Length: 124
Image 1 (cartoon, rainbow, N blue to C red):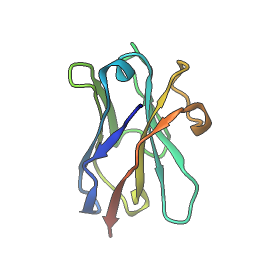
Image 2 (cartoon, rainbow, N blue to C red):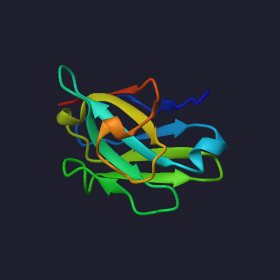
Image 3 (cartoon, one colour):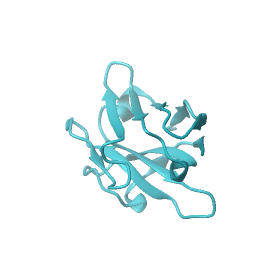
Image 4 (cartoon, one colour):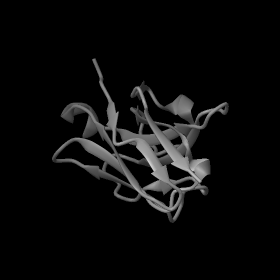
């Protein structure tokens, strides 16, 4: 059974920073694309960032580009999302996900496994 476990969410003031982590098993992490999505209150889930297996260049949504940095640590089987210059609009539940079929896409329907999510709240 595939398990993804997010951590690192919390409450932060606008302009602050948070670092989210997503832990999973080695066999899964090493072979597939990892992605981050978020769901703001009352809105649909949206793409944040992704890195394909073997590709160290992350792909970001326009809304977070330049503020968020996604990375993968193949030694610890962890994906991280470093978030700086946070805005109230970044308030959401953040999810990590796995796409077994290759490309770092922005479409949630391409992702097969999901974590339970971690809440990020940015106060103004």
